Image 1 (spheres, rainbow over the protein chains, first blue to last red):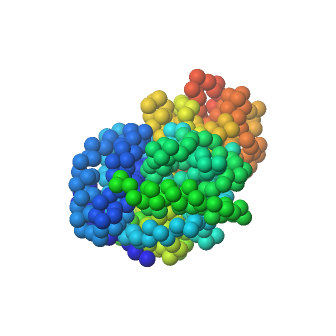
Image 2 (image 1 turned 135 degrees about the vertical axis):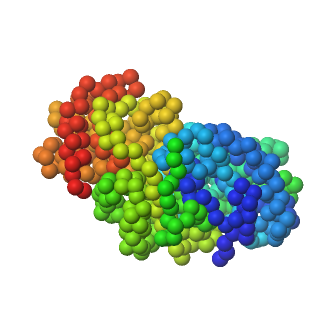
Image 3 (image 1 turned 180 degrees about the vertical axis):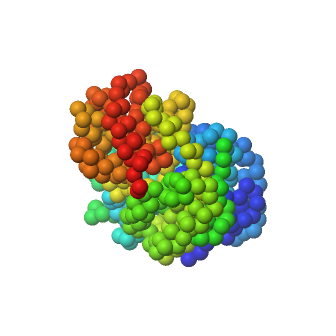
Length: 276
Length: 276
């Protein structure tokens, strides 16, 4: 058990936040979770690019990217060398009460540093997923971005904890597989990799993008496609990804077992050794 | 333009909040917006009952209802006599990073007091709604409760602001009418009132419950039913509700105009004069 190692709000080291922040009031903001190893953040540019894109999608004017980079350097300088850094950018303090943004809010950035267990081999043999009872909502305007309104992920993750599973698999309203509550999902069938589209719901994870890129680089066939649960269960293997765990084979989803993890272990090893 | 008049975090007057609060980190909490007139909160028991129910639905152990009542009394004692009070209850500070609750978090309560323009007649002639491009997600586990993950409402309200409309009408994935971004919706056809069910998505507003109760008391036929946009447009009149505005006739939804507001004005006047 552990709390944050350090927190910076708009560059000032403090554990407290203005209570009128719209991130708190309405979930009106975005976040990124970054992993630092040996004092260096993996995939930093991909995270900052996604954050920038998310701000544009939500209409949040965020002009402090250079200051955020400085915050990250400060957090890293305090160590330990292996930490999880969480960036939150919100629309800022509420100028008036009510959902509608006023338009003149000043975006706020919060960086916090958290312990991150090393354990790169912790999940090498695979993890179990439960099937969440929650369904993801189609909302193209919000799909893909990592906004702060995550009560659905919280509830699905609570289901996973209760079932003693690593993560909970989330379907959309039509029953298509979208993602884990905290991971993206891939299947492998006859050597071809498939991951669900995230243009209607779900989050376009940074590690998901790395897998798409690296499969292409390795000459492994990969596509973003609709994926039913039946199609997933017909796959030879399945794996989940996020920047903290990397590529992790799925052993089971509910009662269904996957027999192989050949390609997922190959990708795991390959991506572990990437520089960025 | 105005900020909060006063804020109390777990009973202590302060404008700041621990940055590791799960309400901020994940939208993991609930809120209520209460209206006080002449120093007295309307429908207080209904708000606190909904808050209690929401905590149970989210698995938040909240044992400070009496302290919250004391916070409200403190806020009211500072005036002005007409204010909006916003209660937020979150799961509390994160014990560890990640969506899944640890289980031992200590729930946190935040009460803030905001200016609330008197203007009980401001919308008496009716308001215009735009049709939101966002669709509400079916999620029975979260339907009805007023949780903090409101980015969808923020984006829909921004659409309403841009269209210079009072509120944005939200449909579900199947195209059924559910609610406004900040209001519940009712139609009247041949003297019979219909409001959409909120067991799949949407919020079960306190004023919505008052309208259901008072229609029954007045002998007006009322039912919770599925409602398509076509059925809404076939209605004689329509109105929106929340505790701040009471009952407000809808003049237009996009290009569609409603010609009458007879029953909505009657209900408005009746509910304005209720004691609670």
